[in-house]
Image (cartoon, one colour):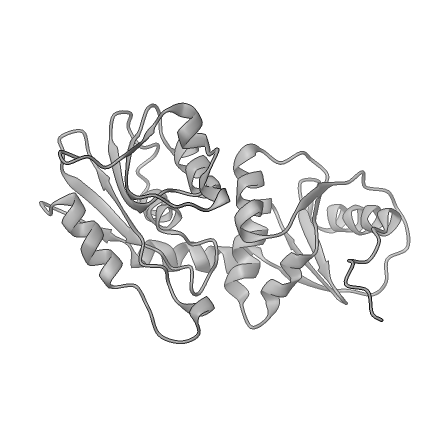
Length: 254
């Protein structure tokens, strides 16, 4: 009978792989191995985003642990919970490494960011919740279920109550391109800097831990995140937004 248990961890092999990756690509590299292929990127975020974007079976590599030499921050940890399996801090030690084909995830991550930014919409004068509904209705719902976009959208509202930017979920083509992350990619691509304190974000579904951490990092101060529908999943509980008190359910006046 074949065991379904994962193979035992080979710590020396992991240490040797990270050592080689650091020599080739810098000390803060993130790396993972899929058979004879090793994916690398300058950060955990770029690695997960890039491998997910590469598609065509490449994302199976994310079943393996992501190896890093430096403890990743809370945002990176939250991203791994949604888009990968696990991240492991390893002490890099020289040792034998079998022949590998190295693949850079960075260019794929860049392509994902550009695609996300291009899909978002800059708004002027539209009611925020009407914009949320319109964007959610545009979700791609064809093909296999795991390749469909969830009908979830996010709309950023300025301090004067004007809808500024809207985005929808692109998770059918890249698992980590949730609506909030797509919105943030467009915001950064426009060179807007941190989101000002006191602005509001209208979202169709409770932000997951990954998106919540990214939103907290992106704002200069309190961001009023108003949620239309509660997500009962475990990854939507105990988030950075909830810990900060920045998240609330939509009210009749919200």
